[in-house]
Image (cartoon, rainbow, N blue to C red; front, side):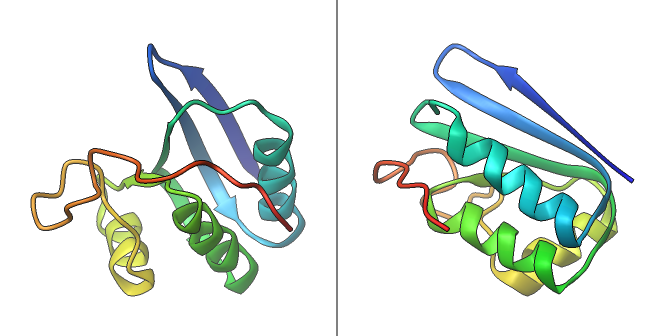
Amino acid sequence: MLRAEFHQLANAMTLGLEGRFVGEWAEQVKSLVTKRSLPPKLIIDLTEVTYVDSVGEQVLIWFSSIGATFIAEICYARDVCERLHLPLKGDPGNPSSERHNGTLHPST
């Protein structure tokens, strides 16, 4: 099971994910994101994600390609981000972690 929750901030949007980010559920989240009018910053919170399969990994990589940054406060989520080279929000080693250098271009 997967829960996805959007939170609008002043100049950013946070997408909190909870549960298993797999298969059709991951694709549905991608579809939800492509249908929204997004602000310049998209932040994906993976802290409550318990498992990511290969489809979920591809969706996370896609999020990164459109400029998203990630929050990963537990070991599993941090491992996923490190393995997939996803930019962590607030990571001083990541020059793009606090800013977005382009426009979101949703594509499938």
